[in-house]
Length: 378
Image (tube, rainbow, N blue to C red; front, side, top):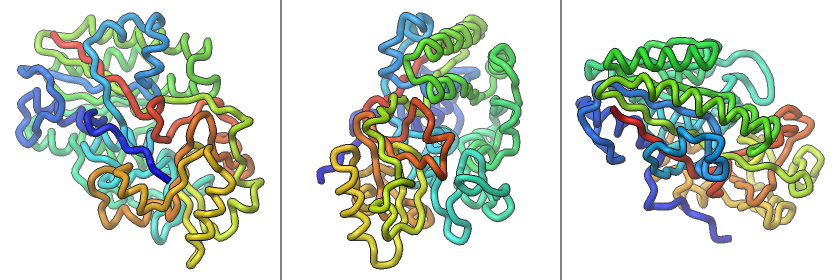
């Protein structure tokens, strides 16, 4: 099976924060994406789920976003929030930062949900057994920027303060918890006006997409709210201020007829020790000696619904980046599955909430991979 490869001509989400900091003249950062220099204060604002294709299709609902200077980026594999936030926070791709899925297997711990920092699908908090700073030990861009003398702020929902994922990939800046769109806009604006570097995060577009589907009336209404959020920040940019709007992935609408329920398929369970990832990007960990049978079984059941390959083949295809650290390799499945079209691998018994979602993401398709980089500068 010939595997798709990511576009070598497109920059990655991981390139954004280092490039913004380089434009601010912070020592130790080199521009990977061309951004005008002489930036006095900046914010990288991540809108969860704002894929480039979705913005193109619904530009009329987001006139402010559509009018900003734009480049197209790609996010890398998997195209999911844990990996995307880690890419922004570390400046690295998943083979180095190690957030290789919404859920992945950690040696001596088991399958961990990186968003909740608990066992997948449920269980007790793992921050003591899986210390976030050890699971992701690389210095973050925020730690490096602060060491370079920059005031760094992380502006996100108050509920994420001190979470496992925040500690793993967003540590180093002052965390400022917010509660609503106006709160987020005002806090980001103040951080930029103060000459600092700010990372801001808004989750609701992704949430509405999961619940109602990307492009649905509810999703379009939420996109209009995001457009107003960005307009509010742009209007208050000071001289020398920069706002860089990005996303962590796009999204597709799942076709129930094309989806497979793993929990109801015995052939997909034979020889399998554990399953992680998410609906459109699965890691399959096999029992000793079962790799060939599991690979053949998953390929037979899924057919053209997905690319099914060994973890080594996915690494060789560059899905996880140019380098995969030794500590990260065991987190990648023995078999890796990336959905095609509108399909997905559900787990209706083990993961009933995730499996009921209309919108999904995680795979290597352009709809999920490509995101906008939107720039506003004074």
